[in-house]
Length: 472
Image 1: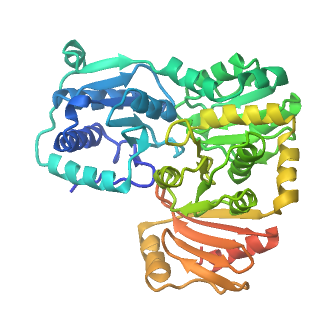
Image 2: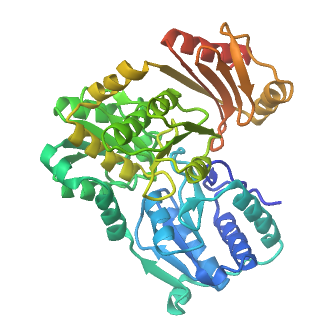
């Protein structure tokens, strides 16, 4: 039976263990089988890849299988951000696309993200069908054609969507306002793929741009390619020492955003999402709901309510956010991990577009990010979010699954409980408006706990109670 199983963000595996040429080509053979069954095989796919070890090679392995199956493929001709791949699927009107990436996972991982028509993250229904098709393909020899032969027959074609993608983002932000603000920005691609696109956009808007951690390093400088308070210390120091307006970081494949404010403080993605939603409502005059996953701040709900809107809660996984946005007509959707999407662009998260919109927000409001966030909390109240995660063995995961999700055991919290949801993890909603959730990661062998309360002590207490209860 195939070991290829899709989680919340595609298929990811350790290089040389699960991520092998054989498995990459098996996955593509399964996708070809699925496309033929759906009658879209002749319309082809888009293939993109990032800077990870073997990503370039894996994009060629994939193309060889599509060519061998007679499915035309358009392969982006250089390393590319995942949102650019999604944009190409959308703009080239392809039924499917894939990006060779493990996103923000450690360097020992690689993987494949699958996109469907319109550049959307593949839904669970699609990945379930794909897993079935992969199992069927496993029983037969994998058809593959040499890359050179595929090019010669026109089944493999190199494309470049960089200009289209960059121009699309520039058309969606107020470039003139950013020019007038003369922002001084530090960019940290985290050794990933955002530099070319994001630096081009910022320089076009006449920002002064300094770049750190830009070289190609498949080990990501020995750190996790995920923008958080720990991994962005160098960016924070750079912003403060050079008196810059802000620092912008993107994860390994540039679909997530991390921000350092003018004071050198890490701006948690929860705050960033609230800031951008508030900006769209208050300063751009947009109206519409928002969508967040179940581990993301409820301050969004308060902001939405303040403007006569509502906030939809969905399970973790950006495919759920995208679907929720389509269903509700939301103007923004996002996750506390740093991914967000804004109406009118691609149907997925895009750290590059989010960064450009952030610069517009700073320019048009004339406010420092720290001051603008205080404007929001003065009106809607402050919340404090605390999170933690613990590495899991398969045995411990099985034990905790049995206790928490089968028997329904949980800590005795010192706050009256309004309700409990097991839709995705175990989320306890308190009568005071706070909440705590405990769930397994869909991309790494981790158990995560997140709490949000009106004061930091209570939030820390909720996470500590989960840790003590499960002896973590």
